[in-house]
Amino acid sequence: MDERLRIAPCGFFSIDEKGFVMEVNETFLEWLGYEEEALIGKHIESLLPRGAILIFHSYFFPNINLYGCVEELFISCRNAGDQSIPFLLNAKSREWGGQKVIDCIVVQMKKRMDYEIELRTTKRRMEEAYREQEQALAKLKQINQEIEAKQAELMAINSGLLELSHTDKLTGLRNRRFFQEKLEEQVQLYNQEGTDFSLLIIDIDFFKQVNDTYGHQVGDNVLVHLANVLESYTRPADIVSRFGGEEFTALLPQTTADEAKMLADGLNQAVEQSVWEEIGSLTVSIGVATFTAGDTETSILVHADQALYAAKRNGRNRALHFDEIN
Image (cartoon, rainbow, N blue to C red; front, side, top):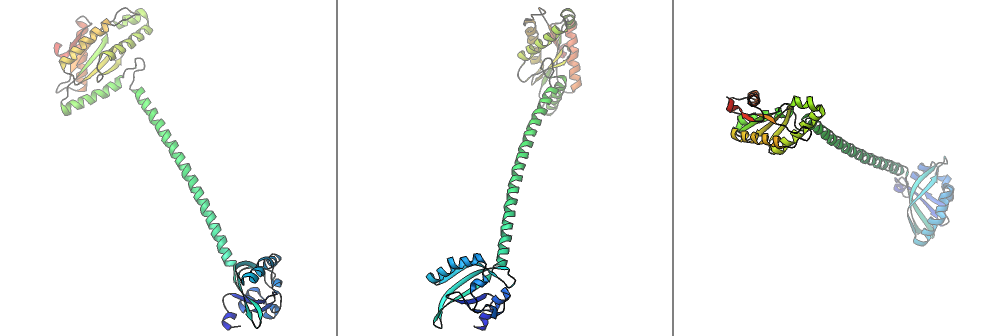
């Protein structure tokens, strides 16, 4: 045997056509822990576990006889300590010295198997990690959807609460708080752009008599009916509010003094001509004021209030503008 083959980094052995070992290199002997004398002349089956013997008879020898070679046959051999060592075997038959010889090259598979096991383990862990990631992403998506739903619900609740905070419970009109906010906006708009606006304060004439005569439930019904009349008669841009008790306000954007007085006069007629089934008839007194330079949120309310009381002193069921009494 060539010296380089004897110490090659792969195992080498030759067997005759019956399977008896003819040559073996030192690398293979070292792997199995045998001396050369212990293997030369022994049948290859003496190194094989039972399963490997079956492979040799059912696959190895038939392929050698038919094709003259075997490639990448996975097989195990027993070492001197009777432990099974996995190998990858390539074999080729040839004529040598007048007889058929089968040369075999083997490479240990332990490290490769360890690598494959490690790769499979790593692959499995990666797949599990991907599954966990997908599950986590799905869960995160679900949580985000739930958060969005809760946010939408909260926004709806907040919107509803804001609406309630701006609405008079009895009449359904805007309340004094909402009116005050819109009045501030109109004052700011006037200061910035000079946009005219006017204000009505509407008070039911002799409302105490309605409550005393017909009861507070009827009084509440009258307030609701009047709220409907005010909303029906005023314009879409006007802001009608219940100011408190039997007092109502109407904020009139982009409205001059003359336009406000005309609207208030018409409102007097609309209330008087409305059908008041429970009490027969009803009238209101209205104070009108128009914002001018030097006015404030407080002063325009005071002016409208002064005009209202002037209307009551002058016989009620009428509208007076602050300019008319000043």
